[in-house]
Image (cartoon, rainbow, N blue to C red; front, side):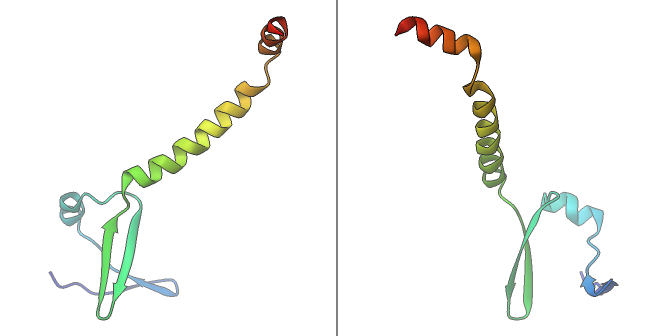
Length: 79
């Protein structure tokens, strides 16, 4: 398929037809790779994004669970 570059502010872009997007499986985030004479658009691996968000969520959850008075009481009774 041949298409034209379109102006988007100071940049240029390409309109990708819905049929091609559906067939490609691309989501909201993509990775751009450049070689001489070519720009490749690939999907961002889901597990890479999931691992980052899961670890951040876990840190927040752990921070909230860390300092609870009822747990301090339970530990104090064991000492």
